[in-house]
Image (cartoon, rainbow, N blue to C red; front, side, top):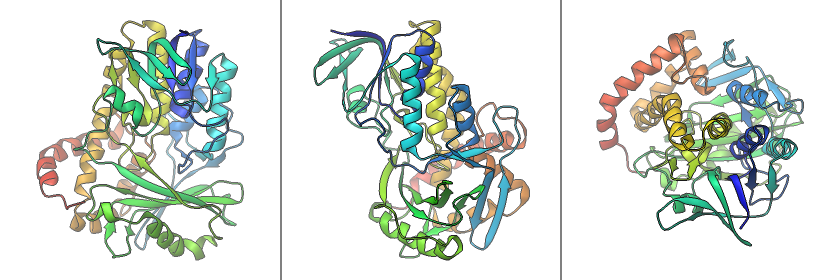
Length: 406
């Protein structure tokens, strides 16, 4: 049986980041991607300043990406346009880079670093009799590894093998996107409408977006949280059509360039590590419930597990879970609790307007939407999120008990 130090399941940003970092450490690493080289991945294509910072750490050339200066937030008739803030941790700009190009650049970088990259090959974790992950089962037999990294995105068959499915008691999201031509394709700001309504005029906890790609097109889409009333019957295609019609004139939108496609946004995981394996990025439920973004967390956790394995393979999985928890768990827990709060229509209808109502609150919203908040965030935003976590912890049981039927 072929043996590797690390085997990565999934060739998206998280898996590729693991492979790049591991290969540069001299670790023998292989990546299995079920899609073909250059495959597309349905996504909003937006890169936060945090994601740009992680790509810079990986020495990825962003020359083909469209640079984004900030965020335009729309809530009803209120519009507030803000630039990404200057921080000591992240650059002051984001980007829009279609996933077909981003993922290809990352996997090519992994190959150039010395990682073995295999396409059009779906694999599953291989377990021994004691419940340890010992490698992967491929169509051509078993490959063994000291560590298996699950980076396959929204939890599916591989996650079921490892017991790493999402927590059914926690919220998740659904999103849909397509592309349209627009003369505003080179706008310096991405746009988010925080006050979406479905065909029954029910407020939707989520947002609609327009992400200019700089190539003549804009990525247009909508996302919604499972905490809303009527979520299971929500028609995403109708929601996207309605949002497009709402924005058609102001963006001079052309017809859809491809059929809108939807995807699931995991926001929790029952487990993110075990004997012989870890889950990273979306596979670990590391998606911000307040914006649906997770590319940056995928890149960061991919680099983290490679660094920890390089330092000490024997303690890497436990240290990974501890450090991920310290860095992200508090903020993401607050986001999940917030999603139950805005699942209540009375709160949602007025609450999101407050998010852009004043400059101070809008700046905090900007940092949240840019994934610039975590356990290490200094200043007002960090303090506000810490206070919000404590207050929402008190309200959480009531919010869950009184949530509307999905």
